[in-house]
Length: 168
Length: 417
Image (cartoon, chains in turn orange, cyan):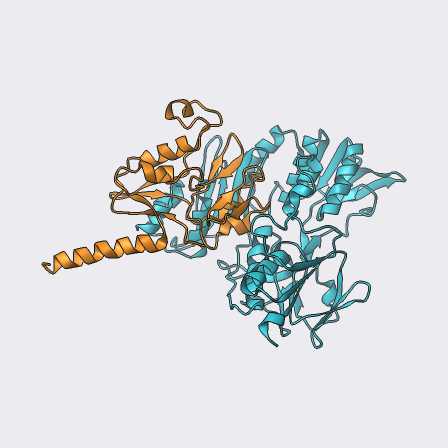
């Protein structure tokens, strides 16, 4: 199987505009339009959370689809499974809203939909080529790459900086 | 013997047993995995059985194999196969009916069964239930169809969930609780105020500080409960939820060390060679208090079962223990999480309590204030897993303590300290 793409965060780029949250909620609405999503019931929820860390850091946090996903193993009704693409998915039909996944997620990225009494989290936008949050990010703080591509990017930037440091 | 012919035998086909089978299959694609189940039905998600009583889910909805992480193939589950004895010298399990099953690696995952207090008389009567298995739940559902009044003995989570299932069916339900408040194992009375209010509003009748002495019955089954106060309550059904204890009887003749539950080392191995134990039947430990504990929780059993499975297949994996208290759920529309050390009355733990009209939280720190050791969240349980992580890793909380106390901790605080 080809290495699946993942959503990576470039910590130095996020300026805390929350565009990703908006795009995520709209993508997970029925209408997929901001204007009607606002009044939809159940209220569309964002699965990415832009957090602020003092003194001046911003950070989008979202499901890492952990290789050893604690939520999937902890689930008491078999509602959480992994797709072939490596996405850890909550099946809302099976979810009984016991919140065990919320209790074990070390990233705090599983939300509780109170109107529906279901847990929800990032599904990497299965209908889109590029996840909505990544597509909406004006500073490219969120990128959608394979692990190999992403680490190659990081190495390239580092070597460029090293070269300029050496006066090259 | 070559690894690819290894015979893995697992006694018990619930959380620990099936999680172990899955972990073995991940690590050993060709070994033979046999799971012995004493139950007559295929493995299922046991915590869902209250939904059979309410009628919200069917037996098919609870099936385990093929759901969630349980997708491994070539796992032979033998139903109606109760293990009667094990012989650790010859490496065999005797199954009810006399069959001998040979093993190279054995997992004891027989779980636990309900504790029926011997001081209560008349518990054998028809219409008395201690909900544990799918079969119990189906029988209870049948009984509920004929009943108007139910008395539940015990104020723990299992009984609360069952009580709600019966309320949803329109029955009149009274909970008889020996402690001063419901959920006394999971929190202190002051922590449970919001939950108690929600239970009362939902129509559950709760009597605290009292217990049953007799279950009264006649030819047709249960017809009442006599309390220690002398009060007699009329009912057609009784549910006992007084905790569980490990299923270790079949080990009496073996040399496997048992002390309340099966004693295991940090790698889930028993004292006998090639024998492992996991789940409710095993004695584990609490990483915060270092106490030896037996827990009765699906999530813990899965974690320990996976660990045992890896060890059985030769992937050495240390089990890191679990909190004695680790529960999340929602009763009467009130979500709550309780974990770690939460019974703080009369102790020197640094405790921070905050309550509003519809939320409550209690954060418990070590006596020196440097470690988070316990948390209760009611109403708002968001990010609970982060707090569990901080507790479990015994993190120095100096820099994040204000966020913990205010319940505003997020992953950024841990990543960018």
